[in-house]
Length: 531
Image (cartoon, rainbow, N blue to C red):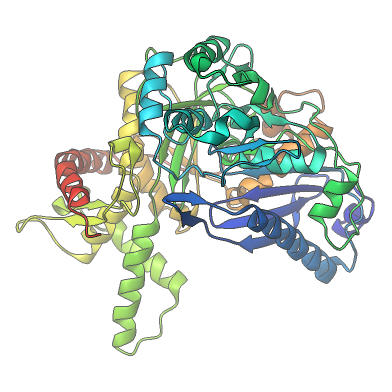
């Protein structure tokens, strides 16, 4: 059937993802292809020193995003969305949303993954669990509130992530996909749920406080991809579609984090595959065949949506500093009376970077718009570092910025490939860094000394990924998630691949040695940052 018939017959599947700067909705057909989209732009706010989104902005954003989807469906297909086959909700991982009281209202403003106030809690829990607990994980936020003596902690009845919160309000179910759950507290890959020993240790740690809850009392149930996770209630339908056209009753898949949906959208769920997302922030996800030999501060251990262990390198910064410099170059050209097309400018500057020296002529770029926990810096200050003898030209300047955007990713992945001997068959890149053909792939291939693939569909992003999980939920065809993606969605398509150039690999290795040697300069700049 065509797209209009798919929508009219209620067989379309909806995926919605809450990103850091945009909420996106994607409607897919019975062949898992996007047929309509909607979006809503939003920004976090710094309130009382913490990054947050207000609850009313969350719901306004969701409703406006859905309304934009509905408007586009009307314009394109001259029909209303009355029924859906399934829905999936995804959002930025981690963070802290605590609820309590008879009406289970939010007790303190939502604290996003971006906050770095949890250092003391993360360090103590990492030692207690003998497991790296990142600053942004929900358990770090919870324990930091306990250390700070926050009054609301005793009243908590439910603790969840943003995706879990939206799903709960749409279905009434307190559940979470295992991938997102693994960003609350570590998940045992054998049981696919919260690590029992770590839960026990945490309960013993906070027992002297005398709270009326234990950890499992307040966490959502962890569910694998394909598990039953509830249906859209009448109240949920009203909250999603304020026009009143959408009918309740369709199933929702387990809500997932943006890392999990990125894995799905790039077909990187199977062991020995991985993906790298490069946008405002960046992260790499490598699906492991076995557990690592020891914990590493640079590596976060999470899971795929079907519970396989994943080593994640999460970086707070990626392309923002590149964007800032491109804007300056655009202004320079406009001063000379030139009209500048931004897309053409990006393409030309990225292609110029490809002609730079493999080691960037000695230049080093720190893209730290905000702090970078992986390198131990809780605040940031963008810098370009060079000496008088370095080869300072446009090509090397741009190449240094492209290298700098993925420098921290390399530091983390070097641990996996060099110290842990992890083997990977395929790594797929997605995000704005790869928009210019070949260039971003070549840079990342040099950084990781591994072939890098890019798929045309990767640009559909996490909203498409969670729509796929919702489609899998209602018709898995008897396959596990990895095989379903391989055989049904991607049908053997692995995208276009670029192999690492030995000269580029050697050059990036020289660059990263300079990068590490210059980290004290960045640290000094942060320590003396202008207030």
